[in-house]
Length: 512
Ligand code: IFG
Image 1 (cartoon, protein in one colour):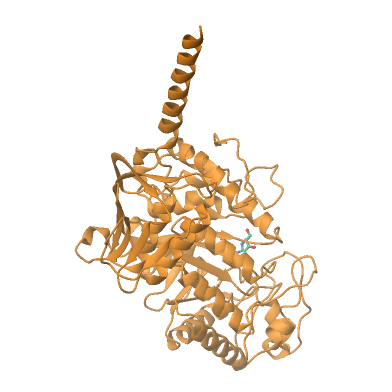
Image 2 (image 1 turned 90 degrees about the horizontal axis):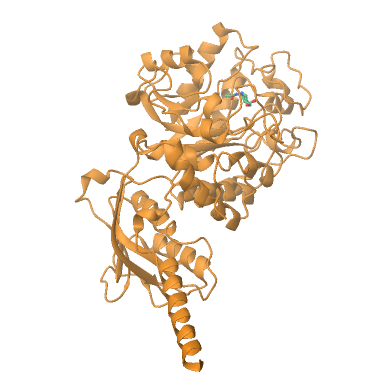
């Protein structure tokens, strides 16, 4: 009897080892739930084990990204992986290098090759290297217990994006969000290969960026927010800190000064900007379309020139966004020359113009870009003037639209956007008048009338953000809702590991 029971124990133990090995040692790279879906993923059936002894080798110029990767791997695992500033790979490790010998990868593509002893990320540019790092990180759990081995299935991923502009917007004017919140929002974008953060820095309820030549804009115009609470603003040093944090994660900051409408905070700060020479009251409601700069006073253009000059000096990215939306109390015959002059001011400070689709009623300067949010006729006018289009259709891409009538935050003037409705559309075919060659990319705006803290933002932004990132990155032929939702379901635990208070849509089979 004794021998028999001993035999049973041995068999059971072997079985347990076998089960634990097969469940924990990933060997099929195609089973990883990547978002955005890469162009191609080939599995080669083995595993690479990440250990403290794993070295990150970097080609000259990629040290920062090497440090970023090491920090992310160490954060996940508690390991102490080091960066060796050489591309001479002398042992088991990860190599980051640049090469222009693979033109198919383009400006932001990469090849990620994983075998038993070596991982390599090769790209034409820093952007591609960063995107390859994000894909590599998605092969790993977002946090592993220290004794859990980090094992990556081997294979080859070749990948590059559909659109060059893949962004999100954060409205910090209706409600103000501090530097740490903006950095967390940037982390969300970086994890999903988005490369633009559009900051809506001014509106009726608040002016949020320090302008040294017009200090009242922030000291007074930035003092409140929707609901009447204390507002806030970024000093120029804080704005530069945000810009650098974004740049280190391959994200370009696009600052927006909305005008001639959505300007009450400035009009309350400086009486001379008003046609009647009287400063308005600060406004803490959520109405739109009631304010306008005085378009026929020269001081208005001196003001705008000072603002754009200071903002351009603080912004390394190529764009300044001039807003232009909902100028309901600016006569069209005043609006057009105003927008024409403001465009010239932006160009004179070395930047390119972006504006909401209404600006297409003016005479667009070369390289102006029109952000389609609601009006197809406006956008078609922009295309007639050879402008490129950023697709931000409110009915599909506005984060502040409720998921359904039970959503605790958000609005629904453009309709409800459940997770599948926010995902199941193709920018190149959504509007017949707007075709692929007109489109620079996609941007999902978050307007903050109904959200005042990061937890609220997270409820509206997740789980829809990964879907917008995939629309911007992955070709329509490679993505369908029924397949995507299974990958998204596997990202729920990543959201939880990042303490993201996401909306648990019942349309997604979340994996525990
Ligand atoms: N439209 C306004 C925003 C904001 C939004 C809320 C644009 C371009 C409605 N303009 O969207 O200021 O109020 O969903």
